Length: 163
Image (cartoon, rainbow, N blue to C red):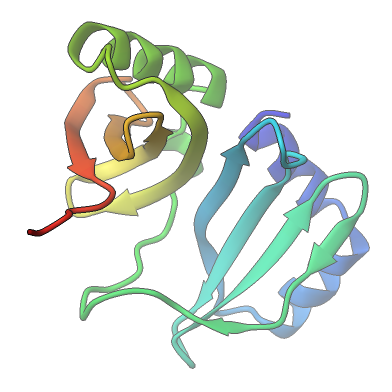
């Protein structure tokens, strides 16, 4: 399921409608999905509440489930609002771009798990794609959600074994 399809399903649900009535200050802040053969794919879509600096997350699959409001992982920077008009690149297209980047620049590092977050960062609104690879490294790519341009890519050691 593509992000916009999952968002539409969420926004038409009674769970979301009840939430939005009670939480008018909240705004769409991220969408998350993990692609792994051992895990059933489900979108998690989060809404940030600036009043209490917490996020409410909905899991979207056959049913809509609202998770309890939670603390957020951030530094002192503001949680930015996702702009739907700037999501012109689908998840499928973003994954194609990521795969091409991986094969061209990081071919020995084959992914077995993909973690994807659609979010707005200081560098722009991005598909933040992390591959966990067979070489115990993570490959992180930030792909502009509007243009499809790879804004940043880096390979990071999963473990650093010191002698």
